[in-house]
Image (tube, rainbow, N blue to C red; front, side, top):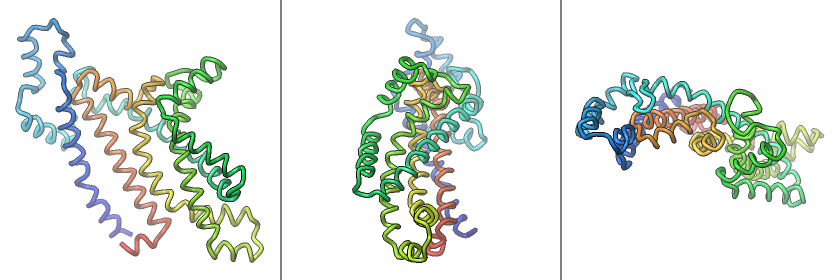
Length: 307
């Protein structure tokens, strides 16, 4: 186990460096001058030049890149142009909100997908299976930027059950979590259904039934446990997709997280803050996938033995 974990960690080490390099290059290729954006169109050339020099934006790109990597190794992400605060402080102040929303969305997806996928597999080719298949297709077809406003119109404006925006209570979390988790629920439901169908046809399930075990025990204690092994890898990968999707959802619901902060940083051409936000998302995605690899081998030791 320790050897396997060491191999995964060694393979992961170059990924943050590549992610940091790509983030730096992409941000600096975006058109627009952050100083001009901050000072406005009427700013004098000497004012613009002084601020560009103070922020190091007049240096060659390779020098800025070397400074960026040097600061990154020291844990210094620079100073935000927009908020005039260290990027690390700004990112850490918003990170818990995004993590909270992402975990809530994942919980919503699993609460829908697991019982739905099991029911669809047990009632295969019956009306329940067809109805759940239609709902999963609808969830995949309905984009986040459309679902969010529809939920706001129905549950906030028409019925008045839930708040439109903000953070602070469980009620504020419901609509954003459903908006982000619905598409993932549709994906996982179809995956669990397919995996469950394979397990229900396996020999050990027939043996368990022949021994007189109750059908509920056969389905949930034996078949479901084994069917979730391939789903676990997809859950880890989709966690990163939820983080990326948070940009749209947080903007719709004014959720004070990294996604909304990223949009504000891009609009203000705040290079350090944009880099910090994207690196935080990349680091979380890398960490979650490493944890997923470890959990995968714990659940299925054959992976560890074969590696």
